[in-house]
Structure formats: structure tokens, C-alpha cells
Length: 271
Ligand SMILES: NC(=O)C1=CN([C@@H]2O[C@H](COP(=O)(O)OP(=O)(O)OC[C@H]3O[C@@H](n4cnc5c(N)ncnc54)[C@H](OP(=O)(O)O)[C@@H]3O)[C@@H](O)[C@H]2O)C=CC1
Ligand SMILES: O=C(O)[C@@H]1CCC=N1
Image 1 (tube, rainbow, N blue to C red):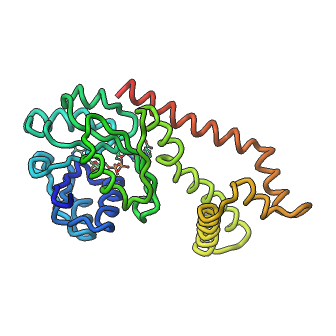
Image 2: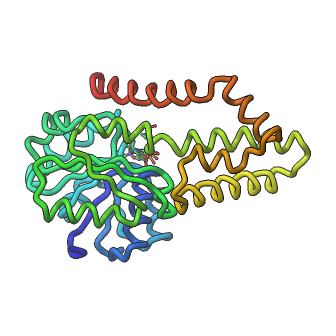
Image 3: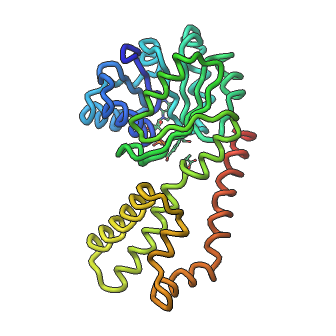
């Protein structure tokens, strides 16, 4: 499987996350190539992971068995149409896309009836603690197994039966690191107001988040039970949590997740 050459078109945040995961799980750097419209990120990727890079998307896809489309959704039509116009033979290759919003039918309108996996990783993939949702179209079992292995190093993979579930994965895991970062940012700000130095406050908050997440993963208890273990009757946590509840935390979270789903659907209609 490691003989397949994988080309990343677009070498931004998400390409970097997946490349890091592949290298970590032992994929040969010589079989990974990234192309980007500008040089700086390519130089960094080559330095960090020893992969091959180029500035020409066509050069990258011509060498590849698997093509990972990792540009922003707004750029995808232009990128796909350029590839297929100048290298129509790539229609025979396996495509993987990381883009939010764009449905399989849109890729088929640009590329024809290609074999494609829609993926939705998240940024913690960079440290092997991500979650990636995967939806296959026209793929063989071998190709699904290959893509699963490609993303295994991102952390956890979840194969989906319905394409619409990709939008749910966006809300639950794809966009979600930002929710936690926002929460931690707010906690750090308050910790600094209380007098902790910025670096110290950041570490205290992040360590607490990691501790809580690790406990949740290792424990059989529900989130509600774990929360109640922290909450002494008549104590401090009760006051803090009641303040969140009174401010409508659950509704806020639900609204935010639904907003992410709505935007993914809008993108599917407008891009
Ligand atoms: N960030 C995230 O958490 C997640 C993102 N995604 C999806 O991943 C995709 C990429 O997002 P992200 O990595 O954050 O975005 P980035 O902006 O970091 O990366 C996109 C890259 O594409 C390059 N690019 C743009 N146009 C072209 C082109 N014509 N040819 C070659 N390269 C090009 C850009 O180059 P330049 O350096 O010149 O700008 C940039 O490096 C999006 O579709 C997004 O929906 C999916 C899951 C999570
Ligand atoms: O914000 C976005 O559109 C992308 C998809 C999920 C995370 N980042």
C-alpha cells in the first residue's frame, strides 16, 4: 500500500495535518508530494517531513496514484477544472478531498465519475489526536482500506454511510477544535485578569482541558457523571456551572453546531 504516490494539491493547514499523520504512521516521505501556488509552505513541509514538493499542480498529479484536494472550497472548481483540462488521464486515479461543503456531485461535474473519498479531518490530527470522517463514492474495498490507513495516524477514523453525515462531522469534530480553543482563550483571559502570567495561564488551562479529556476517554462515566464528581454540594463548582447554565450554555452550543451545519449546506448550494 505504501507504494502509492500521494499528491496533495494545496499545502496549507489541513494538508500539513494529514501529511504529519502519514509520516508518523510510517508512510515513506518519498511517496508524498505536495504542490502549492506559492513556495513558503512547501519549503517548510520539505524541511519538516522530507516530502517532495513542487509549484505546479499538474506536475504533482501526473506522478500520483492518489490525489488529495486540499485547497479552500472557493478554489476547488478552478483547481479541478485546470487539472482535468490539462491532464484528463487523472480521472482514472483515486481522489480524496478534505474540503467542507462541496458534495460528490460537484466533483463529478468537474472531473467526471471519479472514485472519490470525502474526508473531514480536524487540526488535532497534527498531533495524532484528531478525528476524521470519511465518505466513499465509487471506491473499491482496497481503496477504502488505503484511505483509512492514510488517515489512521490522524487519530480516529469514522466511515459514514450517508453523505449528509459529513456536515454533522463538521459540527461535531471538524470545526470543534475552535470551540474548545475559544473556551480556553476566555479562561486564559480571566486567569490573566486574576494575575497569572500569560504563558502560565495558557499552560494551566490547556493542562486542565487535556486532563478532563483524558479522564473522559479513559472512564466509563458519562460527561454528566464526571461533572458531578467535581461538583461538591454547596461548593464553588456548582456556582460556576450554574452561571453557565443560566447563561444558556447548552442552547449556545446547539446553536453554534447547527450554524456550522447550515453553512456547510449553504456552501454546497453556492460554491
Ligand atoms: N482548517 C481546518 O480545520 C479544516 C479544513 N478543512 C478543509 O481543508 C481545506 C483547506 O483548508 P486549510 O488547510 O485550512 O486552508 P489553507 O488556506 O491553510 O490551505 C489552502 C492552501 O491551498 C493553496 N492554494 C490555493 N489555491 C491554490 C492553487 N490554485 N493551487 C495550489 N495551491 C493552492 C494555498 O496557497 P497559499 O499558501 O498561496 O495561500 C494554501 O496553502 C478547505 O477546503 C477546508 O474546508 C477540513 C477540515 C478542517
Ligand atoms: O471552517 C471551515 O470551513 C473548515 C471546515 C472545518 C474546519 N474548518
